[in-house]
Image (tube, rainbow, N blue to C red; front, top):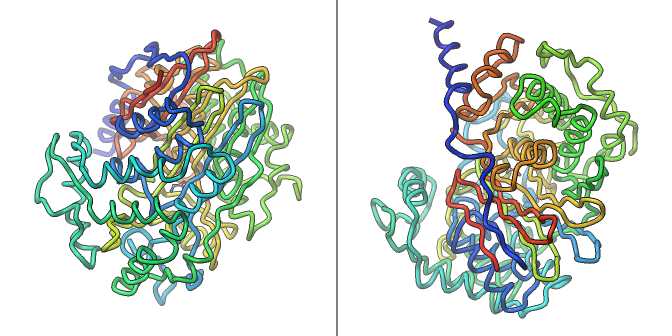
Length: 563
Ligand code: GLY
């Protein structure tokens, strides 16, 4: 029986061939582009760019528009990371990740026997961290924006107040979440006024329009003080959550130095801790650059085996060394050191899977979501913004703030709720990511910009919790090692290994029959990815003649737009 089940699983992952072409070219524009998870959000961003706004202006408008049209992950009740590259090469990174409330403590999700209480860090009021999105947008706009703030929030106000038609996927998801919305909310949210949503239904969000109006008219204080803040705190009191007025008033985003590294002719610019994404991505690409993957070929046994083994080792480092740098000394330089990274592969055996028990985190030199969504923007001047933003799981904690109509995140689950025990992504975390008041939880979000020979080359990122890093890694390799267009690289099937559990998770057909079977015979434990698809990415590639090619993920309703 067990054997038959195993054979079925292997066949599921390896047989079948995705109908998404890896040679497909995406939308090509001459001057500017926005790629996001929703066509209406991409259209809002494009309009801002057409009016002369820059990439940061467009990012602000897209962030608020996604909070309306893509409530699974677009948000004002969550957080995110923004990586920026100015046309002159200046780079910056903004951390607007959520923080643990002041009343949070290390064992808040454990019972008296020290065991994790199921779902407590995932659903309901106690799962929410202090939201960072509104502050992040205000701070980004203050430093780099050029159009008036109110003009950038207004499109989202209109979308919420006037309504918009639901896509088939969105209608389905709202119906699926109905039970949780009813269970975890203290007041009946606007989203479930209707029993059953279908494609084309218009959804209006009056309470969310009110909250957005406050933000439009009062900026930061429209969210962290006044009526919206009062609604958040009242919601917490009704549902047993922790976020207080003081937590909201003291929330601040942080400008951080981006992670940068040269890999061949490319320079990777990505997010530093509290994201693990930038460091892990550099490690993966550095390891890969030591092997002729282009020559070995796409989806071959050699290439895929090497990539899996690199992922296994990099995620072992992630589990132990990464956490909020304001609370834990992350050995960034050591982890990025080329000889350290290459040394991690000394026990790599071509032709044989390593057991994850034989791999542990390395000792770098001291000191040195699921649901989330990503959007990529390039403006007319050539400024680029790469933003990944999240509520963590789809629709976050499932809790709407009554009176303000937005969803709160369940980002507290990204902490190691019990160091050593896996979280909802089955990621194991260590002490570096234990809960502490005011601390930011470790993330996998990997908003990334690539330069080639000193010039802007690619803007890319993805949703997908722990699979974000491997998604971004594989898309970049698809372009730079296998010569795919941006759209084809996003279309291509994906697989994922994160050290523990010791599985290669695969999309339908992602490994190919011959490769999958041989990897299995080599000892790789192959399993289908429960959610069916891995990641949902948005990329923009600068073509040799300066035009832009969009890669919008067919796994969702994603859309490229531009001119
Ligand atoms: N909530 C997913 C992440 O930040 O990695």
